[in-house]
Image 1 (tube, one colour):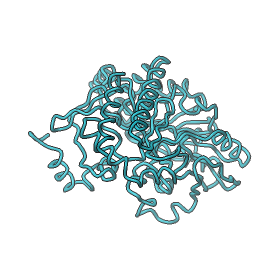
Image 2 (spheres, rainbow, N blue to C red):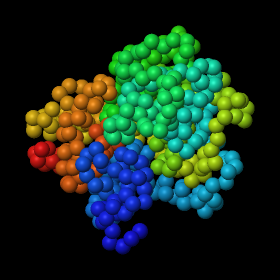
Image 3 (tube, rainbow, N blue to C red):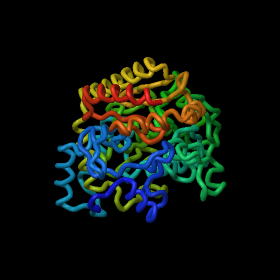
Image 4 (cartoon, rainbow, N blue to C red):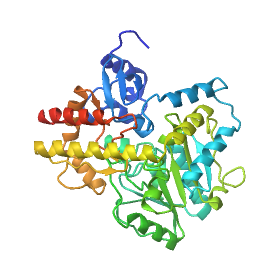
Length: 421
């Protein structure tokens, strides 16, 4: 790392060697009209940039760092694993232990396969569903982001929505010809040509939109009637809303599930799993091929096992309490200022929309983002040392490292920030 680096100069240098100066589009801060800060280190609820400035961080690696940054137990586990080797290309006991730990928490996952990213997990789960049903068509929902594989970029949220892209250049028409995009929170017609319905059970890639009463149950019934599989993308909600994720919270059991973020403990690791009869179609025991050199990486499995072991009932109660407190305080700040805002909460996830009424689908989320208030609020908060997600389409992620004082500090700074708008 260069001595005396600053964010502006690093960003200019980065733009010379990588597209947009970043390794993932939302990091560019383009949708909030700012220059990204370059992180030098992080600890607990805080990150420090290369200029030495400290930020109270509500990104937390997009929810992966549920314990907070650089948790001592996770660091210790990763260091211990690293001295034994960083990658083997062979099975390890930790892979078995992590899959067993996940299955205990999510009983619908009778078998799991570890991969390296959420994109890999959803892409592979879709392939398994198609292989099992012998059908090609998939149904997804507008504003739900399931990674950047070709067939799933249609109508995506997260970075796709942030950049205003309809999908992506470079994706051939035939790649999305079998993808049907339906409005979130409305149960579509599912016919016998559909292999699977993939959904974020809590949509956290268009801000934060909870499922309407009966929506998930309706999807389960429609899939059963048509012989299609129901796939829950729990990359964000898995192991965050509770031990069993959104499917436990809402009592709807999918056929397949995908996980990431929390499961990897802040390292590149994800998984997909589900019914045994579907999962046993995967190679080497079945005809559906899926592979990955770094799948089940020993550093990542060590981190994941440590994190899952620390997430007990008390931890989830504390996480949900922090999110609820933060939402209540911010709601009070906006009401005092006469600013129309919605601050939804689902478990330990929080959203923020500058809108007159609750946001229930992608169209409403886009309307809220289009007014530009979030971008101005983001910059005002960043100037005061609070790092919110650099996009109006992302959720806010309190961690176990955020204290009551941190939440109160955030509300106080929000009061000063909103006054400047």
